[in-house]
Image (cartoon, rainbow, N blue to C red):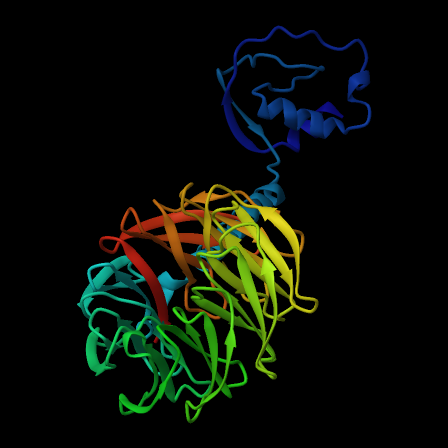
Length: 449
């Protein structure tokens, strides 16, 4: 048997040390080899540098210090190892491409972020190059800016300049400036994207602008100091928040004629509307209350008490809950929109200020201005995941402009950067880079074109 096993082993050359090995008393396989073949034992001996001799063990050959022994290599195992390495490498490449998807866009496609600064400049950030590629002066200052839903344009307003402006994404040039007659702060689009709406706060007026001609087509009077104009989801009504009056004006979206005025909390400055356009929630950053307005009847339903002064309202896509952030109370309150009752309170951190909800994923990303972090919150389980750094005083946020966002873009107000944070379906996050955009950046819009 020993002779037969000797010839089963092939083509391995080894230089062996001298070993004094006794022959076995009989030709039986030692007891500790029971359960495995003698051939396998010999292969293990050969790989360990030991040559099998006539007996059990190893010996020094009489005629040479170099001995060629035969080893039956396990080529199947080597193939499996190589194939496994290939699969792992391919999987890693796929993950890398998905996580950094904007860096692999086709040549004729562009993914940009537009960040406003306190100096009246909009910084254009190429999300493929991860660099600021242009700085466009739009006025003395910048209010809200938004991407046009169907055109390759960025629209914004300049309160100090009393005008709206339009930036063409392909050239990074201002193609229109539209005088409004006084201090606009926000801008919104009609449901068909043919009209833009804004207010002239110092003139107590609301205006509609034709997006094709860039001309004002309608103007109407409002209450005192209108800060914000928002179109309802059904496209039929335009809601105007009158800051000094403490009222919500309900206007016809086509004619701008005022249908009704509803008294709300003092100094209102934001509004959120249910998807069916039936109810609006009005908040003030100086009040610990939120007003609930019936838009069909034009009536105040309730003023709900909050734990602290709010900074932002975020509505679930199905309209079932309204989440109200409050830096003062260090957390978030959930309002049941069916019963108009204040529900769960969730502690989030030092100063949760701004948030962005990722579609129907159920993940709310929250910036903490004091801690300098971003943290994802599961709005179903109310579980807060591990926060990640996002510069100094993170504020406004937006997702990259793809169908399935992989990046969260965070404006870091104190450090003057745009923080790029990788996000994933399991709510893990990681800071990828920080891009300088200018002093005191404020708002952000994104565009894929």
